[in-house]
Image (cartoon, rainbow, N blue to C red; front, side, top):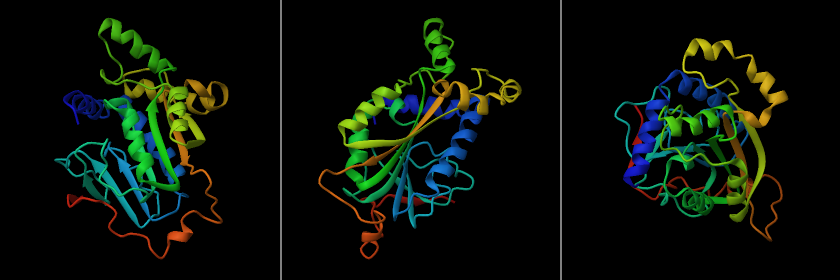
Length: 257
């Protein structure tokens, strides 16, 4: 991972400890729990952002968190093992070995987001799924961030390159990843205090109904399609007998305390 990407991710880590970051984490955790609970298979991986337990509600027998280093302090409530990756553009997993990959705010804070998606496509089995979380540039938060770049008063982490949803969908389409679900969340105005964010909590249900595309965060779910392949029944049922127990191609596996 290059120095700029490392600084960007550190800035995101710091931002997630603010009231705005806590607001985003709470709502993302709730939606991720809902989306991953009914995705079945054997092997699931979360790439980056250990502050969110993206696989908490998933029931696959083998689940990992991949990050570029072991956190100095264990994340409370996290019991899945960690696989250390030197670089997210070279994931330490065998090709076509994973049923689910979750990318929470990775693409916008790394130098080569399209290459990361290529790696995700490589490691997913046919009909495997990916869930991507990102900040929405076409939102009140995105507009405030754009203004902050002119004034120096950044609302979101400074070095993030926020990806518009149509562009992300184009990238996925080029990789034969079919978007099947999309969600927006976090409709409160860009406010810096917990009290004001709570006062605007009524905007969550209103936003979903009246201005869904203006949510500060989007979450996209896509499926890896393979041309000429037809699956009968659940995609994971055929692999039940030969499901690998040691998918990570690395010996740097750490168990969170």
